[in-house]
Image 1 (tube, rainbow, N blue to C red):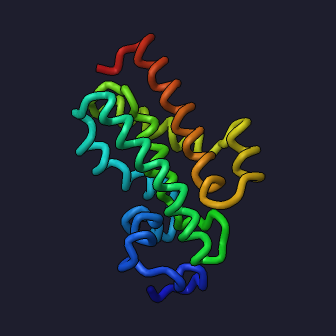
Image 2: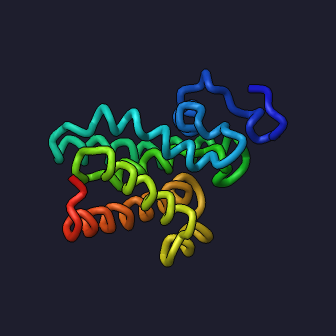
Length: 164
């Protein structure tokens, strides 16, 4: 792929691992690639939203576990740890956020906002892990935790102020 960023020039959207690591290409957005990566999770969520909770969890777990490997390979190919264009971690984090969430536009918008908040602010221990854990696990773990934090908040909001 032709790009002014030398790390990105080492990737190809024709490579399925790169394609997934770049969130179906959404990570190539020139501004806010993490937000675009989170948006890339929405088609997957729309496919999954009416599945049973156990099936939703299993698919999200597979996407997350495979993400450790996908992100590790892409980072090694780029020779950059946690390049902003690698957004599979956002895809997984957004799906984690939506585990057991009520189906509807308002819960989705609130979940999206909560996930982006925790992913950007990185409260403890997210920031600690983001700074000190490397490799595919390090790329993924901060977004996994951001998704867990967002899911807990989304469930609490829904409990006290039902979103549907």
